[in-house]
Image 1 (tube, rainbow, N blue to C red):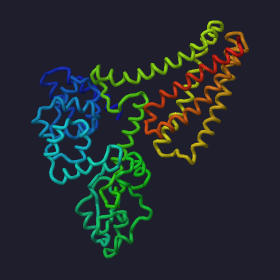
Image 2 (image 1 turned 135 degrees about the vertical axis):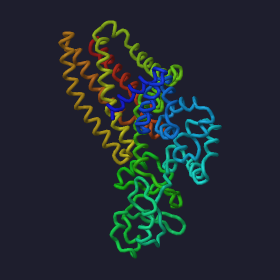
Image 3 (image 1 turned 90 degrees about the horizontal axis):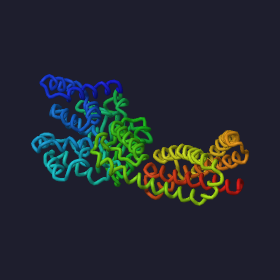
Image 4 (image 1 turned 30 degrees about the horizontal axis):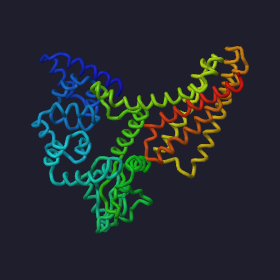
Length: 448
């Protein structure tokens, strides 16, 4: 996939450089031979001018699928180039699931036009989805469900299977007269069973159900771990609303972890590779400013030991070693805890044990590397006491980093703040301040 994508990007980029009939024919041929997700990735990888030129040559019947696959920022750059007539053609009888993906990109006036272009059933599905926020399962329901009443028999299931078989389906859902979910029947158990056997006799035991208000990523993880292609999604009263299938589950978790990765750098997962310079600058400026404030705070603590630094220059040389060792140790723990929180693996039952384990790891690593750094510093500056000072500071900072790496994301999660977005900034501040104060404080006590 990587090699194919690289080749595709190069071919599309070359074809958009020249406005000749041959280059246009080449571009159309390239685009017509690719899947929607591959074209989406290729377009996202091009500068906006070349992306727009390539988009002009995408077949009309491909455009909606490609836009759905794209991130919102690059998608918006293409929608802005399309006249109303083309947008109306794009929205004609659009499915609810596609419009849900596009909704965050479309201005209100275009969203209204798209809704009006939907058929009655799809419009009702879209309006139902809009009642849920993006971070809950109800927003991402697939309504293409195999469902039968609880008095159905094997013959009814076989008749249903001959009529339709959606993607990612291995079960038939059973509901009572009120439409409440009751049982799930594996399709594989239907085949070979006598026609007269009630389906409820073939029901799965301990079949998981997703509540529409359940966290979307948690629900997606539940689907991935269930061993089934999809799980039913129900309302608060138990009424079957639809399903969350493995395809949507994988997309949700992939988007979540991409968002976590980008958030760790203070950036948005949807940011365009080639977004306008001013926009990118604004998006990143706030976290640079926050980082500057924390850097000034660390510098202020260093300034408290100005006299020590003037008399023992070696401390100034070795300060970055103390800070970086604490920073690396803390980021390792922080990453582990953020992943655990994302998978709902961390709670009050195991939090203290996890803190104890990370402190133990920090202590062992701290002792080993403090010893190594002490020897190097002692030889470098011909002073055993400098080796002792940096060894103790390294040990203290790694222990503090381990504790902070566990506590910071847990506290931020309790405060409903994203640990991936702000955890690294807070951790860096803690390890810098602890490291500098420990190192320079010990230097003041032991060297002067």
